[in-house]
Image (cartoon, rainbow, N blue to C red; front, top):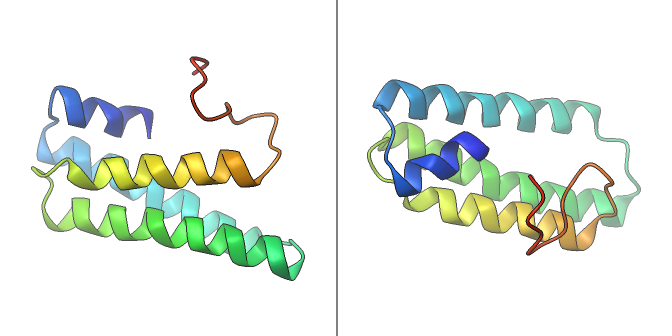
Length: 96
């Protein structure tokens, strides 16, 4: 997502957008394949992953449009608010 954030401010070449969106696709697929959560958090995580998938598909369909990045970032904010993950900065954090 860090690379896609640059798309909002500076714009990226189509090839870069496709590459970064594909990296999101691969990460989402990995998480779906390896998810071992209890039903309630599993459902919450899948909703977040679905938001990332929608954004990724939109970027693949129209790589010049950076608008989907905002919804993808929002999904990551939802993740940070709903899950205790020491590797994920909290919403509003300045940590990378």
